[in-house]
Amino acid sequence: MNQSMPLGDGLTGAQPSTMAQIGEFLAAGGPVVAILLAMSVIAVTLIVLKCWQFYGARFADRDKTAYAIRLHQSGRTDAALAALSGTRSPAARTLTVALTGLSRRDIKESTVREEVTRRAIGEIEKLRSLLRPLEVIGSVAPLLGLFGTVLGMINAFQQLEAAGNNVNPAILSGGIWEALLTTAVGLAVAIPVVMILNWFERIVERTGHDIEDVVTQAFTEDLTADQMGASGTVADPVKVPAE
Image (tube, rainbow, N blue to C red; front, side, top):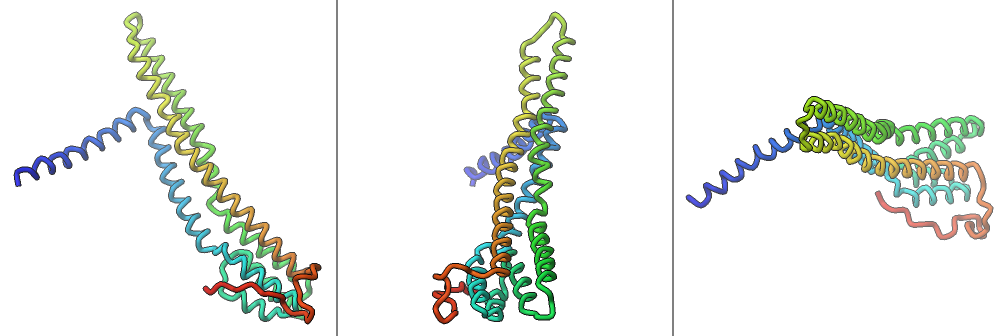
């Protein structure tokens, strides 16, 4: 029983020490570090939201869109629409609009193309949402850190000037490391944000290419002979994954 008391005291004593270190860190960096930490929290929130959005987009449904295209090009548009039912990928939703319009004889192909283009642009814009704030954070964070460093250096030299002949090297060195702290924090925030932003933009770029590819195939014919069987049916259809 007596042996457990020091352990509890040690745990309770460590918490104020950690909070004190965080307080000293914020005090050394000043308001610039506090702003950068707030920006990092915002960036993490946006990244989590984008990952959830991309997960729900089901980008792995490329097999279904490829299968639906082959059905449509073989004259089985209704079967192609049935294969696309329930899919949530941007390319599959856009292809569904295209095939639905093409299956209706009362709508001109030019009208269908315009509607498909509008839907495709809307899908891409949905994927690009929240990317601009991440771009702003990735570009502003290092500049804000540099701004804090400049302010810290000005303050350090002012203290050095006020010391006069009683110059203490600790004053200058302490002011410099505190000034450089903001630049370090700014880079620590910006580097991962920029890397993840580039990854997100690559996903959006690839999705835009997939949408353009499937829509083009919906309005054209497959000129490769090995895609179709002699009877005009789909040759070796891919296996559609179950939902």
